[in-house]
Image (cartoon, rainbow, N blue to C red):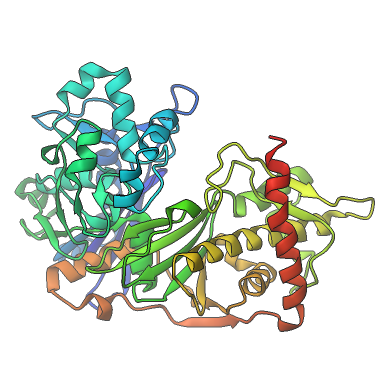
Length: 483
């Protein structure tokens, strides 16, 4: 048996698989986020440990015999969080999370230093780890002076599990301190934030052993001490391992609250000017790129709240047959946009409204607008040298056949829909635990799920969608000046 632990923002999931990768069971525990000031987002690392214990207790209570057979553990987690420890590993302050924006000025200052984009392949976003430490130095200097280690959230769980300060490449790539091409800490970038490599955890690949389970926890849980804890992965890379998106050209489109177009790469292909994330993957000598949409299903949920109809009712009014894009265009910038604009101030818009613009026309515009936002990410990946032949759809929005047809036609490539199953970050983490414990070939373990159906682009509507996309592209600079 192999255990995957996924530390999310709203909870922890513990997932148990057997050596044939069949899912045995799972446990879950919730987490809260503290927002003491505008733009702040924090969690107490002690709550991660509490939630992890609860999730494991639930899993063990339902599957005690199988739980006792665990031979490896893998970790996944929310990225970018700054967990600050003193020399005795005591937590110095609540962890500053990925969606905390207080360090926007510090991020802009670091991003203006050309070394950061050159070595990391990414814009320095306010949510990344390095600008948070610069903010702490300026605003909480007594705390900064005591910092002995900076850990990412899942790696704090590793410290609790193993007693080791270790991280891996995919998560560390989101700190703005990693030389992403060479897969090592950059002493130059650390020095630019008045830190040194001694403040960082050791680095391994996500498939490698990164400590062994402490005897005290092993005794408490009734499993073997010293079993391997894998390096693991940041949440998106772990999901990619669960989806089998690990080989060159493999990609998925995630229709969740936010949207992600994720592509695996066999080489380092940065394109920071278009706000594409270029990170190390969890597998050795592999990288990945991500285009990020901040409001994907969130856009449809917003319309749902406005109209009083559920998201399913709204999309159900459209039927399954894709229609020519209407005269209404929607820009899904409800909370700003990441790729390709990196614009936190821009806001969404409906353009082309008229008396005949009924509810279904607005729904179509929302689905098309999000599809065109994914097209923006596809174009950004192409600029970086990545060409995709097809993508796999995941996330709640992928239940809408109409939406998937719009995305396939906007992207001009087929969209595969996987068979039912749990292929998320916890499953990917469990796979990494299996690899670290067994020495199995990662490409043999991290296979793609069976495809239930494939949505092909509607060739008869390709020209109309291309024209509508050009119109969509022209609207961002038009509305930008009004914000």
